[in-house]
Amino acid sequence: MPPPGFAQASNFAGYIEPDSNASLMLTEISAPFSKLSASYQAAPMEKRGMILTASKSESLGNLLGLAIEFKQSMYGVNFNKYARLFGDENCCYLVLASVAEDTDPSIIKRLKEAMYSIAIDTTAKAPSLDEGLNFSISDGSILKKSRRLQNALIYKPLAASTDKPDKKTAVLVVAPSIAAIKIDNPAEFALVRLKNIETMTDLKVDSERDMVIDGLKGREIKATAKEIKTGEQSYVYQAMLFDTAGYYYIVQGLCPMDNKAAMDKEFAAITSTFKLKKATNSQ
Image (cartoon, rainbow, N blue to C red; front, side):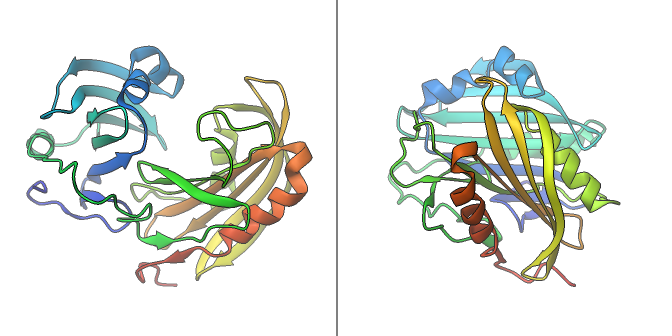
């Protein structure tokens, strides 16, 4: 059941409390529980800017489970987050509550009660990858939607392995922001967002330009950067679209430099097909 006082979110699968921006997000993830639960341990979470404060095993029916609490700073705001992860070796379900650090305790209580009212029907037909999102975006000629991670759509070449992609594999991620934030300078915000890619270093911008897609003003940046893990140079593409309510949509593509020519066109072509499902932008 949704928390009392919360409304259906327009840009993700879940609920939001408009005054506080507290949210409850529900996500199905095509990944084994053993792998996903390992990523919610203290060390790997710290690498992603999350501080684990509590963790315990907690099953749901026949599904293995994990309940965690953690802290995370985003856009200059400190958040407390509460998550319940369930799954088996085929699929997982994530219930994630997010609140600002100074949120009224009564709101947190409502969120936790809703989290523990969750029932999962493992026999139900798998939803489409973009179900619950307020936008649509097409496949490319090379890159296809391969899976969804929370509210992010992940694109990979059709023939690429999801676990061990070959050297020339490109990856494209499309995701909405969860909460509305005040963005005074979209161009500067987009550049900072690009520089915050955790797996890359030595970023050098090749070009920047303003853009408009489906009535949304945006910013496109093309750059090169070095992969921290391998030391190899990569081509980086980013497009951000901003609505008038403070929400944004981000498209980020990565590929090896020897695949830049083909992927530059592919990234841009996919981005150009972005459309809002509802008229949330009043331009």
